[in-house]
Length: 487
Image: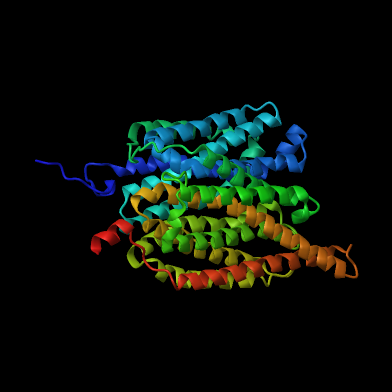
C-alpha cells in the first residue's frame, strides 16, 4: 500500500513536531536573550577595561551591524544546507562566540566574541521562521508564530532585569558562562530530534550580490548608528558618507536581484500585496517599539527622577504581557483573520502614542505603566499576525526569501529608528533651551527633555495613523499555490 503523502509535517501523525519546535525555540530564546543581556553591564565593562562610552557601545552597534550583513544571505544558506546542518552550525557559531566572550582577557577579544555571537543570532531567526512555515499549514500558523513572538518579546524583556542580578552578584563574565550550557543543550537536542525539512537545491552563488548586500546593509546600519557619536549628527560628513554608500549598495543589490535567475534574496516577494502590507506594518511597529524602549527610560530617569532599576521594572509588565499574549493573539488570527485583530489594535496603538505625546514632568507613574502595557498589548495583536499573514501569501519557493527580508528589516529599522528619534529629541531639546531665559536651570533642562520626548511620540503617533489606515485594507492571505488550485 502506497504511503500517504502530506504537504505539511504537522498533518503527518507519524512525525513528532513538538521536539523540532522545542529544539528551535530553546536556541532562539537564548540567542535573543543575549541581545539585551549586556545593556545593563555596559558601565561595568567600561570600568573593567578602562574604555570610553563610544567604544563600549560597539557591543550593541557591532551586533546590529553583523546581523544586517549576515541575514540577507540566510535565504541562500537555507537552499544550500539541510535544516539540521544549519541549526547546529548557527548554534555552534553562537556558542563559540559566547565562550570567546566569557574568557576575554581584553576588550577587543570580548568584542570579537560578541560579533561571532551576532553571526549565529542573525542566521537563526530566518531558519526558525522558514521551518515553521514548512511544518504548519497557513490556517494553523498564527498560534505557532505567536509562540515565536513570545520568545522574541519575553527574552529581551527579562534580559536587563536578569543582567542586573547576574552582574551584581556574580560578575559580568557569568552573562556568557550561564548561557553556554543551554546553548550546548540546544545543539544536542537539535542533533537528536531535528529532522531535515528544507529542500537543498544548491543555487548558484552570485558573489557580486553578496558584496552589494554586505556593503549596503552594513554601511546603512553603521551610518545611522554613528549619528549619536558625532557632534554634527546627521550633518556629519562621515555619517552621510556611510548612509550614502548604504543606500547605493542596497539599490545595486536590488537591481542585481531582478536580473538573476537564482537571486540571493528574491525581491519578487514584494509583488504579493499582503507581504508588502506586512512589511509596512512591521516597520511602523518596530519604530513605535523603539520610540518607547529607547526614549521612555530616558524620560523616566530624567524628569521623573527614577532609578534605572525602577525604570526597568516599570517596562517589565508590558513586555512580559506582550510575550504571554502573543500565542493567544496568534490563535485569534487563525480563527478570525487579521482584520478583526488589527483594526481595534491599531486604534489603541494610536491612542496610546497620542497619550504619550502629552507626557509632562508631573505625569503620574501609573499613566506611564498603563500606557506601556496598552502599547505592548496592541503590538502583540499587530506584529506577528501581520507578519504571518504576509508570509502566508508567498508560495513555498519564496519562504526563505520572505523570512530573509523580514529578518533583515529588524536591525536596519532598529538602527534607523534609534538614530532618528534620538536626533529629533536632541534637536527639540536644544531649540527649547535656546529659547529659554534660564537654560542652566535644572527645571528648564527637564522641561526641554520633556519637549523632546513629546515630539518623538507625536511623530510616532503620526506613523501609527498610517497603521490604522493599513488595517482597514488587510485581508486574510492565501498562498499563491492554493489560489492557483482554486481557479
